[in-house]
Length: 213
Image (tube, rainbow, N blue to C red; front, side, top):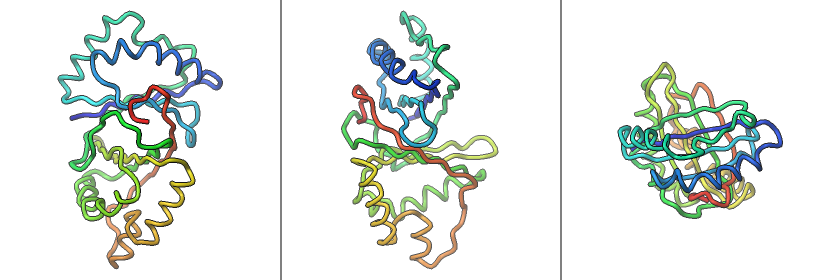
């Protein structure tokens, strides 16, 4: 399984029209392979849209991308609306849940951590120790990683009903000593190893047509 995450940073005041363009065009594209999520940022870098596409393999992704070139109007003509665009490919951690259509919350927290090369196996092991307890508070949408290049990345996405619930759960899990991992290390009286060298965070909300919403 691989996850493709496409991010478009749009010029101000173009978000609404671009979302409508995708809403009209996506049914033809999703006939080739399913879309997992379509979100827009609310906190972090603004005027961004995020699309998440799951594929069973790199070969399946290649076949879908080859076939999509035959779809009229796809990819969308967005030159007048886009400041930047990026595509990242992620590998799901063993405990990452399937990206099936469902309603999980009205807001999604997307956290991306940069680690030095070789740290991801330790991150996965550390999460395995505590994840069962953490999942009692809110659902995990995905935990994925990259392990190529000089810096390896770890992304984890959580769903909440609203920003208030997020704040409450973060306070409760910290008090219980089960989240974040730095708090777990303090509770277990052990040294924190393999710290991220950089951390990013954003809050996103789903479009009405997003499978994950």
